[in-house]
Amino acid sequence: MTEEQQEPQEPQEPQVNIGDIIQINQGTEKGEQAKVIAVYTNSVAVELNRKEKNGNLARTVINHSKYEVKS
Image 1 (cartoon, rainbow, N blue to C red):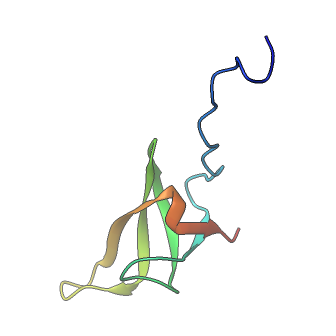
Image 2 (tube, rainbow, N blue to C red; image 1 turned 45 degrees about the horizontal axis):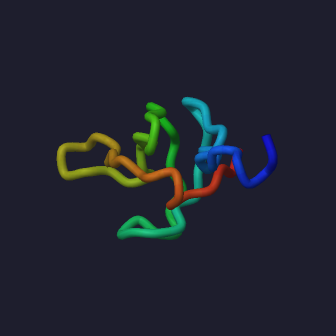
């Protein structure tokens, strides 16, 4: 096959693992760092570094395009 006939490839999702620290680049949590607790096809679930009223760490889901991996 020539280059024109190949199917377009989907963008590679970032390689992130449970326990990694990410920097959020977009959204209401922009600028915060968070710890990855679950990885999904299009997003990751994270624990933020702030507590809710009940004393638990705040959690949210972030799309892959809205963060970068720190470590």
